[in-house]
Length: 413
Image 1 (spheres, rainbow, N blue to C red):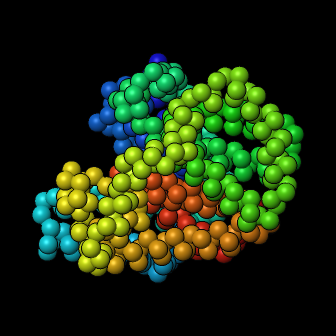
Image 2: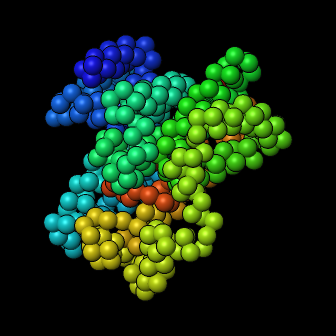
Image 3: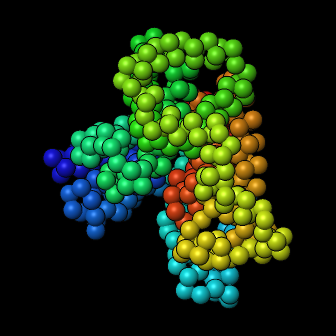
C-alpha cells in the first residue's frame, strides 16, 4: 500500500509538472519532509532526492527556461535580502577556514545544504507571480496528503498515547514539524475563507479548517498555534477590516467549536500545554525561558564577533550543534554583528512587505498568502529550530520574500 501511495504521488507530480508547475514547485521546496517519509515507508530512503533531481529540471525546461537570466542575477546579487544572506555565508566560511575546526566545517556543510541551495533555487523558481496561486493550492493539497499518509501508515492518533519526545520516532515526523505544517494550513484556509464569496466554498473551507485545527491540536505545538494567531490578527489589522473579520470569525467559531468539542479536541495536548503560560512558575521552568536568561547574562564582548558557527552548542550548552531555539539570539550570539545585520535586515524587509502588500485591498491574494507564510515561519523561528536544523522552509520563504519584493505587478489575482 505504501508503494501505491508513492506511485500516486509520483504520477501526480509528473502531470502537474507539465500542467501546474506551481504545485510541483510547492512540493519540491516546502514538503521535503513528506517526500522523505513516503520514500522511507517503502525502503527507498537512499533515493529520496530523486523527485527533486527529476522534476525540477522538467519544470525548468517546460516552464522556466525562458525566464530572463538578468532578473535572476538581479535577485541573486543586488537584492537586499540576498546581499545580507551571502554576507552571513561568507562570514561563516571565513570563520570556518581561518578560525574553526572540523566542528565548524560540519556546521558550514549543514548551512549550505539544504538551506543555501534551496535559498538560491527559490530565487529563480519563485520569481514569477503567475505560479503563486498554484503554489498556495499545492501547499493545501500536500498538507492534507501528509495528514492522510500519517493516518494510513503511522497511526497519527497514537500521538496522544506516547511521550512528546517519542513522537518523532513513533510517527516519523516530530510534533513541531507537524505543528508548523498544520498551522500553515490553518492560516491558508482562514485567508481563503475570508476572501471567498461563494457559500459552498466557505462551508468546505470550514470543514477543512476543523480537520487542520484538530491536527494542530494533536501535535501539542504551542509555537505554531501562537504564530498562527499572531499572524492572522496582524492580517486582520493591516487589511483594515477588523469588524468584518471579527463577525466572520464569530460565525466560523459557532460552526467549528461545537464540532471540535464533540470530538474532544480541547482535551488534547495543545490546550494542556497552553495552560502552562498561566503560571509564572511554569513559565520560569521552561527550558527556552532559561536559555533566554543565559543569553542576556552573557558579556557584551560575545556579541561583537560572536561565538562562531554552532557556538551555542560548543561553548554554552556543551552539546554539539544544540541551539537556543530563537533565531535572533542565535544570529547575534553565534555570528555577532554580521548575524545581527542579517536577521534585522530580513525582518525589516518582511515587515515592509506586510504593510505594502496586505494593507492594499486590491493586492494579489496569493502573493499576500506567501508573505503571511513568511511571517508565520519567522515567528516560529523565535521559539524553535536553528540555522541548520528545522528552519529550511523559513530560508526558502525568505528567498520568496525577495522575489515578491522584486515583483512589478502586485495587483492582478
